[in-house]
Image (cartoon, rainbow, N blue to C red; front, top):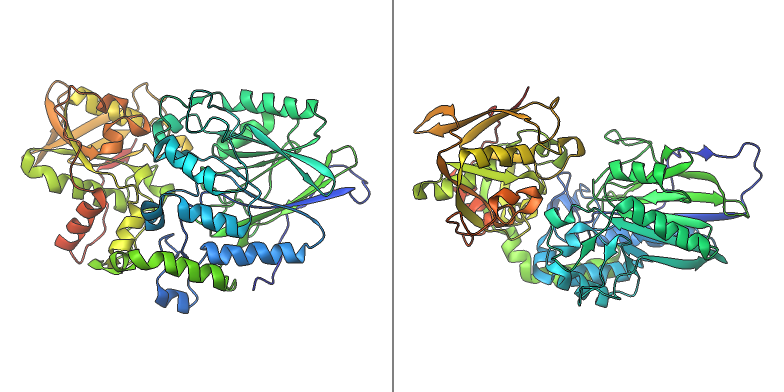
Length: 527
C-alpha cells in the first residue's frame, strides 16, 4: 500500500498573517498516460515480469488505483478531486487492440471526476473520442472546441463543468492545443478557437454564475499554461498536460518547482505514462480567494503495491496480445535513446534507427531520402533482447510507409517546418536518413533556419538540388500533412501510402542488423 505522503512541499503563503484557511481542496491529477495500462520500466516502455519481480517498475493503472485509493483514505472527510489533463489514448498495444475501451474501464475503476480532451483522443477521429465518452460516467471537457457541426461529439463534450465539493462550487474550465489539427485527426467538423480567449469567456461565465473557485484543466503544454496563468483572470490553478513536463521539488530531472507560480496562480503538471500522481492542496478564504498552495507529485515506484483486482483485469485483457508482445525480434548492444526531450530537438539514436529502417525498406524502389517525425517516437529501448512489444511501444500508431516524389525545394521547406517549433519541443522535429542538414536557432522560424542540406548520391555527399525530384519515404501520417508537413500532402506526387506497418519495418531492420548498435553520426547539426 502507499503509505508515504508528500516528502517535500513547495508552500505558498499568498496572504501574510492569514489565519487557517476556511476551505481546503486537494486535487490528485494525472496527464498523458498514453495507454500505459501495464507498469513501465525506466525507459517508459512496458515493464517485464522479471523487472516487476525485482522492483524495477513504475506506474500502471493497478498502481495508480492503489495510490488514489490510499490518498483518498488518508484524506477521508476532506475535499478531494481526481482529474486528468488528457491523452489517456495511444501508446501501447492496449490502445491499438481495444481503441479506448481499456482506458475507459480503468479510469472508471480509479474514479476520476473530470477529464480534459487531449490531442491523441482524436487519433481515431471524432468517432474514437465519442466511443470513449459513452463508456465513462465522468465529464470530458474542452472549452475551445466548437462541436456544433460534429454529429459525433455535439452535446457529448462540454465547455466546462461545475462540481459541488464540501458545500462549495468548483468550476473546471479546459482548453486543447489548437495545433491538434496537425498532430491528430479531429476532422473538418471540429473547430478550434483560441485557447486563452476561450478560457477567458468560460471563466467569466462561471463568475457570472457565482462560482469563485475556478481551475483550468488543460492540454496545451507548459509554455502555453504559463501564458494562461498570466493572461486569464479569475483562475486559481492550472493543471496541465501535453508537454509531459515533470514539475517537482525533489526529482533531479524536474523542469521546475511544484507548483510553478505565475504571479499568484500555481501551475502544475506530473510528467506522463502513469509514473507520477500529482497532488496539490489549495486553501481558500471564505470569499474564494486562494491563500495557499502546496504539493508534490508522488512517484509510483515499487513501494506502491498494485491493486490486485485491477492487476488481474489488466492481465486478463492483456492475455490475447501477450504472445505478440513477448516475441523477441532482435537484440541491442546498448540502450537506444528515444527520449522526447532529446529526439525533438536534435539527432537521436531512435530517430536514426527508424529513419534508416524506412529508407532501407524502399531503397530498391529508388527512394533516397527518409524523414521521420520525432513525435512518432514514443520511448527508448533498453539493451539486450528487443521484443515486438518494445518496438510497438516506440511506434504505437499503426502508421504505414508512404513514398512520394517532391523536388529538393520542398524537402528544404519540410525541414524548415520541422525545426520551426524546436523551442516548444514539438514532435515535428525531423529525424532523417539519406540526407544531412544544419540549422540555425538564431534565425526566426520559417525565415531560413535551414542553412545547409546535403544528400547522398551514390555514396558521396553533395548539396541538395532544389529543382531535382527525389523519391522520399515517410509515414502515412506525415505524408498526409501531420505535424505541419502539409507540403507533403496532395494527389500530385505519385504517392503510395499503403506500405508496410512502420513497427514491422523497424522490427525487421533490427533483426537484420542484430545485435543492433545504436549510434549518431552528425547527420543533424545546429549552427
